[in-house]
Length: 272
Ligand code: ADP
Image (cartoon, rainbow, N blue to C red; front, side):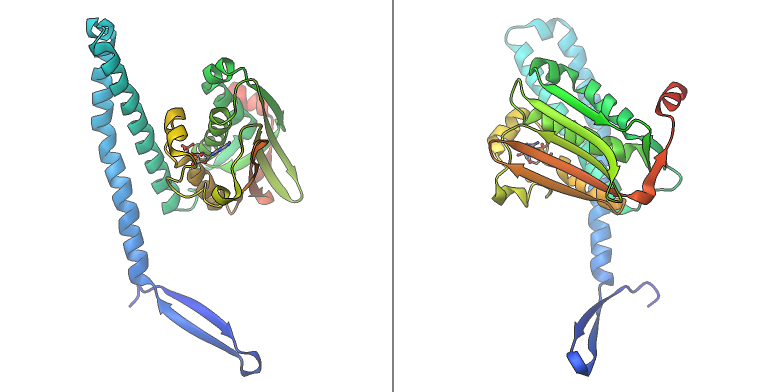
């Protein structure tokens, strides 16, 4: 069959040579594709009705009903939960997108990571100010990555959002973007509660959350770190997590050096 896909399993037998077994994984691949397409399609179909519902809810909230003592809080709760559902759908779409293919060369461009960090910081400014967090940035402004901008945005946004969410008020967050040891490195280090060893291995699994009750309170979908890891792997990179309970966590995304580009960040910024 021309479409058949085989996986080779090698067993070294010492002097007798090597035993090679071929396994037909065509059906498995096919099913995997069906699952991926299904998730992508469902997420996509959910997007439009959700946008409509959220739109009308906003209108209601802006009107007299929004001020109503009894109905107002209920509408706000509906809007809040709707937003949660929207971010779940967006995250599922991101996952489906990054699972399905390698980076699209047509979409790749010189992405200034420092710029993405600035953008993420701005989007989180309300929480940063409210929680009096100190954000320390150590960024190589001229160092860029050859990548799809959306991918780098989701890595930076997810890591920074988590650091802000899981760090108590008044503490520090450090973000570093640099090249060294033949790799490109983006690290987000917080001084939050940390993650215990048993959970650490599992935090990048889809929908995995350490403390369900607490996570629900701070919001989120349990998909963020899974997206970060899959996106990094899409570029032959990786995600490294270090954490100590009571001290904090450090999430480091490593990219291969051949993705590095140098440029004038400020000039590019003006053009944009
Ligand atoms: P979520 O949307 O719940 O934040 P993630 O996939 O981003 O989903 O994270 C998975 C879980 O890992 C979170 O629910 C949280 O328990 C834990 N976690 C993630 N980032 C941090 C962090 N910086 N400090 C402590 N715990 C974290």
